[in-house]
Image 1 (cartoon, helix red, strand yellow):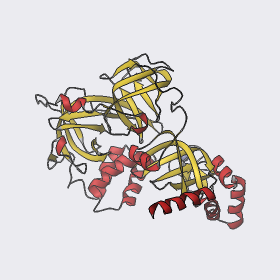
Image 2 (cartoon, protein in one colour):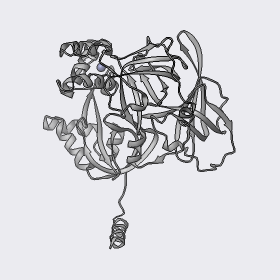
Image 3 (tube, rainbow, N blue to C red):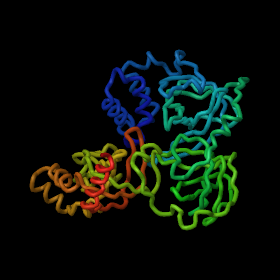
Image 4 (cartoon, rainbow, N blue to C red):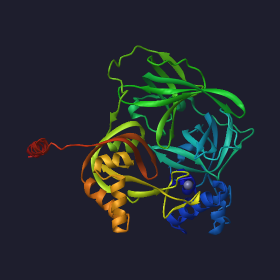
Length: 442
Ligand SMILES: [Zn+2]
């Protein structure tokens, strides 16, 4: 598992260990347990807590967990118990680096409001909509000014037999607001969108031993595009324009997706988009991406303000392609490394900053430094560092236009760049613009 995949587990540990152990140590311990000892994340968390003497102080399902209502949550709760009714539940099998993992997500509510939730270790958890549950030792986070509830390896879900929770209808229907696709962000809950189907496909999958069909594809309006998926066949066809009511937004690594659940309604509508459909790439302000979390085929234009560690000449494991150090792979031990060239840049456009991972081909094209040249330079100097410096020299303070998919985690948005070009600055125009701004302010 890489750092991004370990992040939810790291967050769990950090909540308990933050005063005792520094972040880097926690992450290193977690990596060691999961990637070297090959234990499950839950076992790793218990092992690490025990190692630092924190297991006794914060037992699993601590009786000291506060009981709160959804409306009382501030988004900073580290351990809280909630009695809730499940409004929408989706169990999803995902694959993380070849190993299966099951998460449960959806919407829960009580008398005071609704919130989206995720059970991160959902394999042995059963939840169904309409039923009432105790969520034990949950933690809450704020996302887009909304509270999100998480149940990690230390938390639990218990069916609350005989308990009754009323969720005002008003608070549910209020969740489904009309949204432009380009403005959709993770944690928005339910939305209604109008767009044109630009691709549609069917896939057969197996869920709990039962064959099922997933209907998925891409839908776009004049502001952006988003992936959709449904278990029910809404008969969506490429080229038609539809209004999708009560779809549920879920983010996968920061990329929002439209889930069409049982409450979803589809109607065919007249196409008003014409040629304005955002079938192609959207240029966005980085500040907006920071807010929405991510998306597909996004273009940003900004200035390279930093080249981060891990740029330049790197070694990769020939088995798993992970970047490795000194020929030692965390999963495969000592290997004959394959050399590669890449850049991790920080791009800033004045509204925010984004990390950008740039592959060998684009690095060579942007900098004029080829992998062969980089290897030659490293050999001549007896170190790989001069390569990084050489790349940094050509890239820093350059203006770039970058296109790719943007994911995000706790460290912010990150683009996997698939197209990049240097933006030629029109110095005269820039100067004139600046001058007119100065004059306007006088
Ligand atoms: Zn490997």
